[in-house]
Image (cartoon, rainbow, N blue to C red; front, side):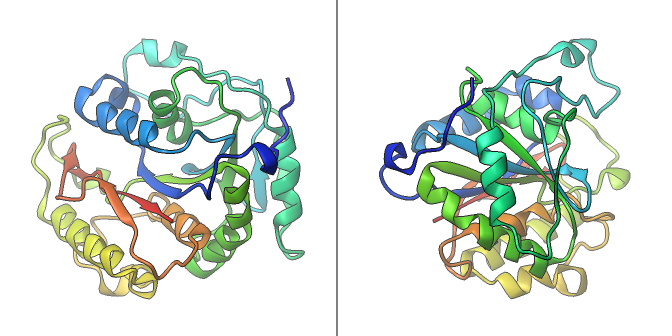
Length: 270
């Protein structure tokens, strides 16, 4: 069934925008973090739809996912039951048309008619909205340039007035090649703690310029992000903020919580 995003029936007020750490399939069995995500979603106004940009879909030009197609199981080494999981959400084609129309003339937008949601999208959303009754549209990550991603976020900002939850999905630290202990309760390496503390302080100040200069100024680099795709979605979230320079609420991991040694810190902006 096609659902129209109707601003007249949107929740009162503007939806926030989120940056979340999406974990991996075992997040679904972690009672602590999954409980935090579930409680976070319960505190939010109920969205009419979700637009999510995940670290696991790097594709230029901007590409939008399809509805009613199988999930993307873009992982390996986990229990086979994760490859049988489903998350069938309502059609989001109306939202896809809106998003395409909102992009700049210099941004080409394609529809990928056979690509479903990847685990950066469906794993956290399966916890936050387990009934799968909210339309979900995934947008590819077309660049790692912070300024361009901020501009994309700014163009998506009006959707928040129509009840659309705009989400960037990544991981605030993601130095997988440098982890030695892959238990959920593993101690965080120094580089993960240092980057997390630096980013948390910059978020608390609303210092977008500092966050964008992470390659040059952040402690823990390049170990925290040997590749940057898990950090880049943050800038879509910040661009979608009412004022990117206003400090956001660090909802999960604000006291330095880690998962497999990686930062769980997640952000909600008004």
